[in-house]
Length: 342
Image (tube, rainbow, N blue to C red; front, side):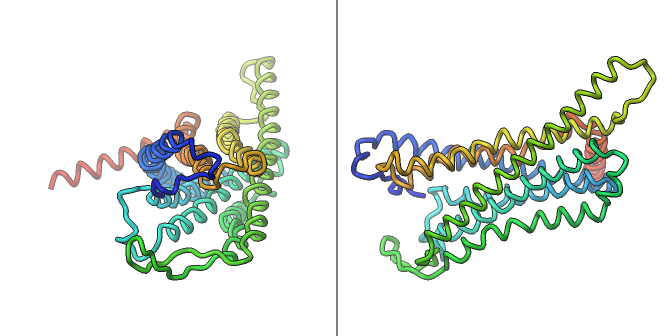
């Protein structure tokens, strides 16, 4: 993105001051704040994966949370690559391809992993919902092998939603007179409009809505069960055990927190996409560039936060995670001290 990209239709030429503010706000957001949080999030998800590997894959919840961390890590990596395209210090004349190639590939893969993370979160809530509703049959319904295959399928399934996008674009060379060189750039075919509508309807409307519905339903059931168990414990005599063990209750609460965070941070995306569809008719003078920048300023931070702060939830709500985390930290300290002795 360059500053000259921020243009609007003639009816909004007087809003140059607004565009300047929008440009510099986007620059700070994309090139500083979001990238710093991305780095933290990538490190946090690597730690999550190491902790879950240390705990082992005997528990289906650990398998699902590991898949979620892998998906979040992928989303943050490609989001970081996409954010590099906003850096004005990187000139296209130093590259053999346009920024559009990098940003297109990175944005698609970022959204790919974002969809995976949402569906894995929904699957984790569904797992916990089954264990609450059918506690005696959960081991036969959700076996370890079933959980592994389900998570692998979920990680790969978003590819199908972006087939229309892949069919509407191709990469070709183009001469750039401004920098006097020929570079690779993303080109759009004649079928772009109809295929983009199909892709938008599937990946940006249908999938988030279905994911949100599953999360809302399963989270409500889990929350209701936890409330009933809490009321039962208050009225029961001391020393008697509840139907949900303490570990199961803690896991349920943790997954409810993850689900609520996902819904609260990514629900605005669905609302904003719906608003854009209406705004094109209501505010016909606003250019697509301005609308796109406004969306990026709102959506990118939500994605980054959602993929980065799960470590905080795991650490504060899971004693097992804290124990494994501290063991991993002590192991790292021991290795570091050992290396420094030589």
